Length: 438
Ligand code: XUL
Ligand code: CO
Image (cartoon, rainbow, N blue to C red; front, top):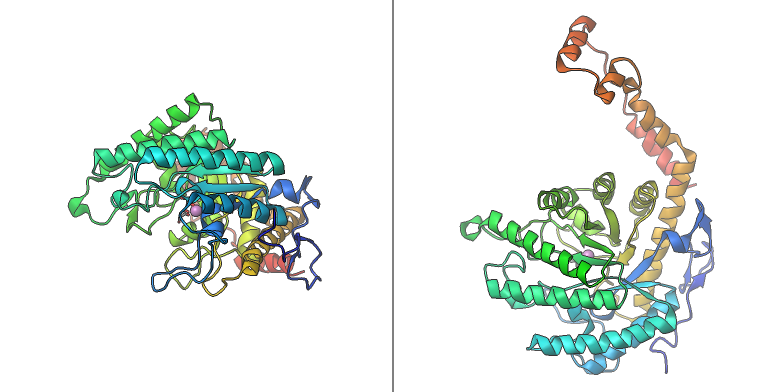
């Protein structure tokens, strides 16, 4: 079979001095960092929807890129060719995982039974390709936001019939996830939210979402799905108020409804920044709650207030991300490039440049994060910053061996406390720079 990418070589590591645009400058899969190869640290995934679907359309203009791959779009022939092209693409880059929505894989029919038949057919073909190449499924999900029927959400809809339709899509997407051996199943609640409380029963909607998730867990476990369910938080877009605002909100929701044992977070960089947080913040919130599962690797634009889904290029961001991941002992999921080329980057070469950029930026982030940890000054500083809790009254507080009364007596006999030790932020930032740019 002729390769759609016959003019593109297999991408290999050539080092930071290489000027070859089709080479990795930092991603060297066999390089060992803190006891594990880069390949093991960074299970990269291709997002079916962006790489094989998104063609540069925006609110003001149609496609700039041609993602027909020589077929008529919205046909099963096109769906199959996308499988060929996708696996070829992943092999050229050494990407070992992929992620998908149901409707990324096949065109949706009017009758869900026909859509499901198409999903069976395409997943047979994908499975064949997986067996031939060793490429694996990271996670699957159901698209419950594009079709007009989901205008008011899926779990949060006001229509019981639409709710059932969502259930049918989740059931099938779980079947296919299990068939493909997926490590995870994602809920991104794009339209699980509201525009105005004038027409919304927020409590009822949230309870209904929880019911749907509970049924999904029960069904998934009953068909042998042993992986993680993920919530992918996002504060807004398309809805004005989305219920899974950020990691802290989503974790609270999962605990409230008893779903926390089956779910973890899939943290997307651009979603965290839209919530007014750093990427690192939402990773830390997830990690300290034992819920850092997977990552949607992309980057937003600080000047724009929407989800630009750019390929990550900020080494600062990926360094702080990998610092969190290393500290958390790695991910159970992987790094899914939920990222797309900019509208004017419409060529086949650009598809590769996007992934080379993203993979190199994460590889460099990994290298630098390991250097920060090995350097030790940041960790040592943080540990010392709380030293007043290591003995005396501080130790009693931490061990729970005191009372408000005892603390008050202590304070009254102490006089005015000295100022807490300096945060030395600028000193720490200069350490970071000296590691990043050495
Ligand atoms: C949208 C988004 C989704 C999810 C999967 O912002 O990130 O593509 O990753 O539904
Ligand atoms: Co995403």
